[in-house]
Image (cartoon, rainbow, N blue to C red; front, top):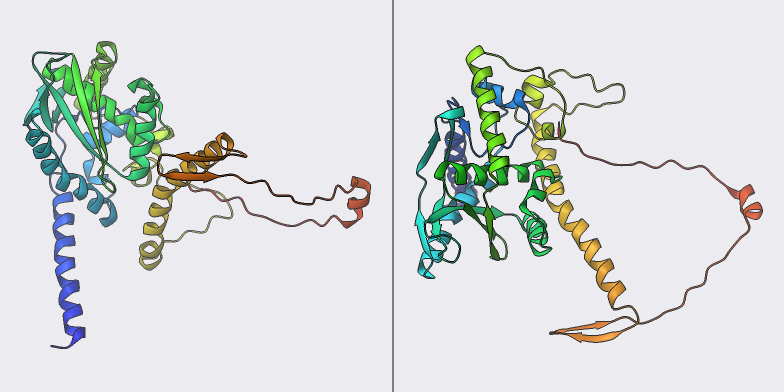
Length: 334
C-alpha cells in the first residue's frame, strides 16, 4: 500500500474521533436548570440566555473540546489512584438538585477526612494546564483565602469556588475539597475549603432571580463586564454587529480563522507562564546577586561584568532626535 493511502486513512481516523467530540458537545443544548458549574457568573443576561436561548451559544472549537477531554480522561484514573493510596474516596457523579432556585450539578466524588469531619465531603477534580496550575498553587502556597479566586483576572477560575460551595450547600456539609492535577508534570495538591454560608446564600438568591426571569421570559439588557471575555453569547447575542470603529480589519474567512484562532488561543495559554518566568527570574537574580551558591542540586553563579555608557547632555542629543513609529499589541476576547 502506498504511503499516500496510509496518510488518507490516518486522517480519516482522526476526523472520525473529532466528529465524536463535536457530537458530544452538541448534545443536550436545552438547559433546564441552573448549573452549579456556572452559577458563579454574575451576569444575569448570561444566565437567562443559557436557559432561554441555549441555541445561541457559540460552538466550542475542536481545540477547546480536546482540552476538555483531557480532564475527563484523567479524572477516573486519578480518583482510582486516590483510592489505591488508601484515601476514602467514592466516585460520585450523582445528580444534586436544590428545589429552591432550581440549582443542580454533578459532584465528581466524595472524600472522608476524619480529622475535620466524620462524614464524606464533596471532592472536585480539577485538571489544569501548567500555567493555570501554577497560578492557583501560588495562591494556595501564599496562604491566601480561596475567596481570592472570586476576583481572579481569569474569569473562569471565579467559577470554581461557586461550584464547590454549591455542592457543600446542596450536600449539607461544612467542608469541600479540590484536587488540582497538573496535566503536563503530574503534580497535584489538595485544597480543603470551608463552607461560607453567606456566600453560598448569595448563589441561591442568584439562582432564584434567574428562575424569576426565566418564568417571565426575560433576558436582561446586556452590559459589558469582565465576564464578557470568552462568553458564549458575547458575539452571538449581546454585541452582534458591534461597531468597533474605524481601522478594524475583520478576518472572517474560514481559512484565516482556522489558521489564526488556534495560534491566538495558544499564545494566551502560554502568556501567564511567560509572565511567571519573568517574575521568578527577577526574584532569583536579585536574591543571589554577586553570589555563588549551591542550592540543592543547582549551582547558581552571579558574576560581575562591566559595561560602558555615555552620558550625553540633552542639548547635544536634541539636534539628532528622529521620530519613529512603534506598535502596542493587545488581545481581548469579545
